[in-house]
Amino acid sequence: MDGSPFNPSLVKAVFRDVTRMHVSRSAAWTAASVTRTVLTEIIDGARSAAAEEARKKLIPRDLLSAIERNVEVEVGVKWYEHSPTFHGLTGVLYDAEGVVVPSPKRRGSRRPSAVVGAHRFEAGVKALLRSRGATAVPAMVRDLDGIASVFLTDLARDAAMVVREGGVRRFGAVTPVVSGESTPPPFFKDSLKALSARRGDGRTIHRDDILAAATIQLFGGDLRQRALAEAREATQNTSAD
Image (cartoon, rainbow, N blue to C red; front, side, top):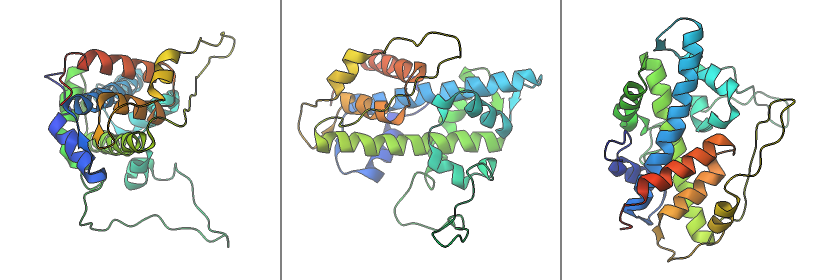
């Protein structure tokens, strides 16, 4: 994890925007690992879409293709309403009187938000792209940056909730199945049960709190399984403080 594109100090900065709880070192590394796994999956899906058009440089259209092909990578959705890439795809909202609800306007904020602070992960996104042998136009980098920031913010909120509630009170799992194929067996069943009950004080977010939050943020299937496994492996020798 020493070469992680998502620096733990930046990860902790996201958590400070969300909660006053202390974030352990292992928790920061775990959140960085989960984010890296998710963004890697998105980039690989976009690379496949670009390859079909004999292109090496990724463009926003490749991001849309990656999400359409794999529902598991549909994360950080709050970013969608702020990015031109997704305009027209999120649908038109109507109020009770049938009047169109305008899109939220960008306003300055005294308190950093996932969208305002999205730029902080630009270097990490570029490093991750290089590690996958990919390049991307600035708009694509901005989208990946924004998705990473919003995903981490949501992860932080859910981790804080896990600490407050003493464990995970709900689980959601969507397992994509190809027509004609048998349904795969449940994955990490014992691990999910273990994460449903929490031990420890109510003032610190630990590694397992991040893993539990990841089960909420990720739909289920291969991506969630891989994200949990890689995070455990990456942080097995990391101190808890």
